[in-house]
Length: 115
Image 1 (cartoon, rainbow, N blue to C red):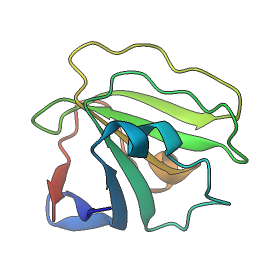
Image 2 (image 1 turned 120 degrees about the vertical axis):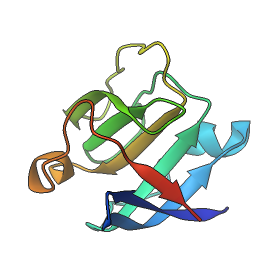
Image 3 (image 1 turned 135 degrees about the vertical axis):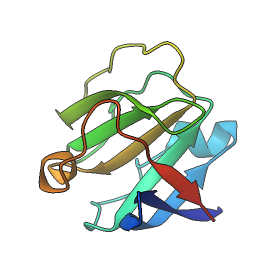
């Protein structure tokens, strides 16, 4: 699985992000993961809605446009939940619960994804 770095302006927010860019990787997502470190995440490509069925921990989910604009944020999405469908979303970044508050990530900010 490919990896990337997620930045806001010149600041690296997440340095160890796996990219789920095909069906099987998106389907499995974080199911086999016990938790995420502060610098880790999963970037789901071609995705506009997520669920946390079968997961063992809560996450923050950041819904991004094709240009990296933050369209929606689900904070502390608990296991067994479904997010709303967010139109115009191309990427969903799943990160450790609390990351959005800790890093002051908010709507309409621009994130950059680089490999």
